[in-house]
Figure 1 (cartoon, rainbow, N blue to C red):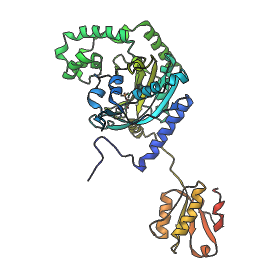
Figure 2 (cartoon, rainbow, N blue to C red):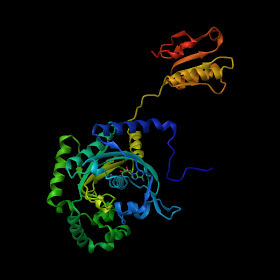
Figure 3 (cartoon, rainbow, N blue to C red):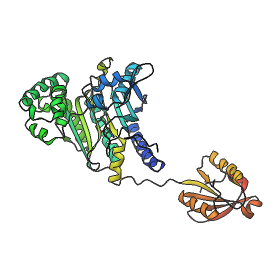
Figure 4 (cartoon, protein in one colour):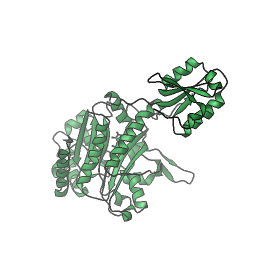
Length: 416
Ligand code: HAM
């Protein structure tokens, strides 16, 4: 049997209502904050992500789906949205149209990671990017939107972690301090962390190996070496989050897996999804535009993993969605009236009602069962004596009331 590729998932009709509900919550929160939707292609030139996310990151180094197309161009299925959105922003000179762009997206994302619960190879993110302003108010706005969406979905077991990675000059100075601190401990680090010591030393803080964390216990922290501006901005973000009642923790070890961050970064963790517990992450990226050969343009954003959020919703039992309802179900009686039923159903369908009937020649009893299963509000009996005299029988499934309606009244029958 041919199966879906490891790490990919079908979203079956029985799950779609949850996805649609989540998408409607996401869209309504973004609308309230005046964000506009952007859609970018599924694949891009590989160089975009290599430059944008950073050559030394796990995403670019190990996880991208990259191939040569027939024209020998290196193509990559998008492993995140921020670089693509910034590419589109630069390519279409959006800055010349207005100084600040507040954009959002819902998109499939591809990363060749080891699949496990909450970790897929094709997954979906929603997210937002505010491009064109250095104001830390936008950092707080981005965090608030992420938090408000998760709260609107009913999630309770959430921890918001924030940190500041400062500006690059300060970060480079700090890396030297950290290197000095770790140099006589290097051979005790795990193999991965030893590699990171040379390539991307900050990422050592993200190590899951206990002995690495033990070695880092008294390490100097970047947050204590920040420049004045980063510090002030971080204070503003914290004050606004307090004003809008978003509980948060400062986590000085939060380093994120993408290299473009400057100043504020954050993650939201769920206690209800197992080891892959980051359901959302983001931060400021004031130098990304230049790395992509655009004019210097500050930006801040976040992305959240839809599958992980739905898992958290399932585990916290938050999504009690109203049942889908069908407006009319035609029960065909006796004669071979399927074509006539089809025509009658079409009249109602064209009037924007949801209508179903039996395509399988089932008994009237089986058709009634189907009408109940589909939550039909009304059943119309099609056939029998009434039909021969030009009438149909209309049953209100909630009250049980049944009345006769002339066949030609389908053009104006009301749902009440
Ligand atoms: P990220 O932290 O790499 O950030 O991903 C954001 C979210 O995507 C994660 O918190 C997680 O919920 C979900 N996610 C990541 N990998 C997987 C996976 N393999 N399976 C399922 N879900 C996953 C970014 O992508 C940045 N572009 C966020 C950002 C936007 N920063 C600034 N603007």
